[in-house]
Image 1 (cartoon, rainbow, N blue to C red):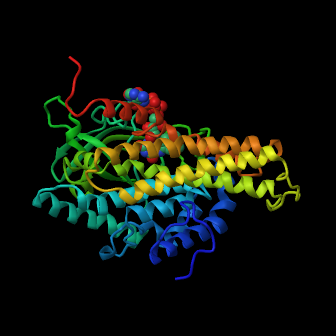
Image 2: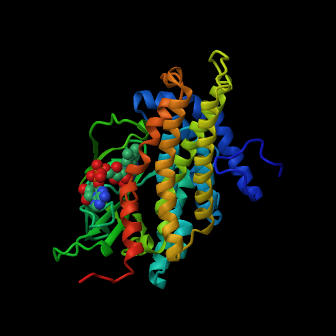
Image 3: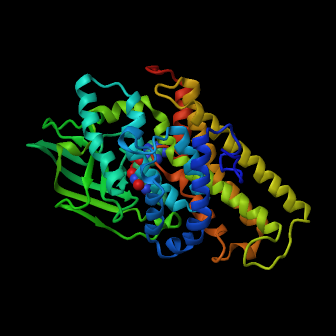
Length: 415
Ligand SMILES: Cc1cc2nc3c(=O)[nH]c(=O)nc-3n(C[C@H](O)[C@H](O)[C@H](O)COP(=O)(O)OP(=O)(O)OC[C@H]3O[C@@H](n4cnc5c(N)ncnc54)[C@H](O)[C@@H]3O)c2cc1C
C-alpha cells in the first residue's frame, strides 16, 4: 500500500499495511466528517450520533472484534493508533468510542491473555460470541460505566453496585455516575460486586455484566453541563432490581479482577484521545500562525520570534508524548515487568497533563482572536483538561502509585 499522505497523530512509524489502511480511514472520516461537526455536540452537550453512524458504516464499531467473529481483528497497538487519529478531530467521539471499543477489546484480545480455568474459558467464549454478534450484526453500542463517586473506580474498594445471583441471571441494584454514552448505548457494561450473602463485599468478586438499555428498573438521570468533553453525555445510571441474564456476562465471575491485574495497559486506553487533542492544538497553531485557517483572514503571525519559539516548545512536548505513547503501546502485554509498568504510568501522566499543557501554550501563542467559539482551539483546551480526572489513573493516582511502587516492593512495610 502507498505511503500515508499525512503524518498520523502517533507520528511516522513502520506501520503494517492494515494499520496504514485504518489510519487513512480514521483520518479521512475525522477530517471530512467529525471535525466539521465537533462544535455542534460541544455547544448543545449532545451525543455525536451522526459520527457513530459513520463509524458503524466504516466497520469501526467492530474494529476490535476478532476476525473469526466478523470484526476488524485489530490488536491493542493498532486500536491505540487509530483512536489517537480520531481524537485529533473530535475528542468526545474518540473518548466514547474508546468506552465502546474497550468492551470488545477487553473481552477479546486482552481476555485471551488472562488466566482462566477451562470451564471459565468455555463460558467466556460462549458469552462473548453474543456481544460480538450484536456489534457486528446489529451495530450495537456498548458503554463502560464503572465510576460510582467512591474509591471503587480508583481501584481501592469493591464496587457499591451489587449483583445477587438468582435463577437464570443476576439481580442488580446500584448507581453509576459519569456514564459516557448514556442514552446512546444499547448495552451498559457495568462493574459490580457479587453479593454472596455474607456482608463481606470483596473486589475479587467483581462482575462485569452488560445491562440492556431496555431493562426494566434501569434509568438515566441528572444534568450534563460540564466544562469539556460535552458530547460524551456522561449522566447517571440507576439500577433498581434489574434482572440481567447469565449470558450477558462480559467476563466470567472473578475474571475481571484478574484481568485488571494481568493487563494494566487496558487502563491506558483513555490516553489516545488526549494524544489526538494534543496534535489538534499543535496542528491548529501551525495553520493559524501561517495564516492558513479556512474562513479566517490570511493574517500571518509566524514572523515573531517568540511565536516561533512557542511552536518549537509545543513540538518538543508533542514529540515527548508521542515517544512514550508509541513505546508503551508497542510493549503492552500481560504481566508487564516493573519497569514497563512504571513507564505505563509515566505515559499516562505525560499524555494527560501534556495534552492540556500543549493546548494552554496554543491559546497563549495564537492570541485572543484564536480563542473565539467559532474556532476549535478553546474546545480543544477544555476537552484536554478532562484527561487527568479520569479514574483509575488520574494524574494524582498515577503519582501516588509510581512513588509507592518505586519505594516499596510488594509486601514491604515500615513497621
Ligand atoms: C468526560 C468524562 C467522561 C467520563 N466517562 C466515564 C465513563 O464512561 N465511565 C466511567 O466509569 N467513568 C467515566 N468518567 C469518570 C471518571 O473516570 C472519574 O470517575 C470521575 O471523573 C471521578 O470524579 P469524582 O469527582 O468522583 O472524583 P474524585 O472525588 O476525585 O474521586 C472519586 C473517589 O476516588 C478516590 N480517589 C480519588 N483520588 C484519589 C487520590 N488521589 N487518592 C486516593 N483516593 C482517591 C476517592 O475515594 C474519591 O472519593 C468520566 C469522566 C469525565 C470527566
